[in-house]
Length: 177
Image (cartoon, rainbow, N blue to C red; front, side, top):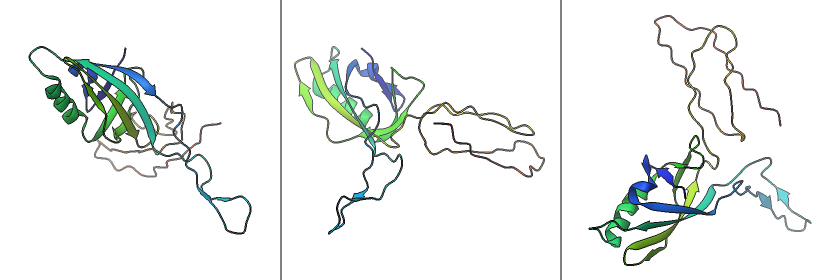
């Protein structure tokens, strides 16, 4: 069994074991269809690859440690999982999502065991990779892009020297399909 890390804390901290329930290969494509009265078919207002948030469901179970009750552990887990933050799965440790829980996770309590289902809402809907930092030299400075989806990019230029930097040009090159 594998787990996940949320807010920098791994699920094993709470003795949680996980099982994927509904991992998706792609988030749902956003439908932008508009029905026009008196006309057959519909007008598709959204063109291209535009996607909604990603929803993924995992089943979680834990055994209550000695000296604690299941409700106590549930409150600790609820505190940890509240809000939004960085989510990464053990199966893809080099990727992460910006996620928060969707809905109220249903909970089954037994004498020394607890079980609940988490539905993560990931927005943006695609996995994010590591931050690339590289010094800029004179001429072209290619950055190795290893992504597979069109996603926004943040480029930060820092000049640690006292010299002025002139004529900086940034060119976006789309990866071939």
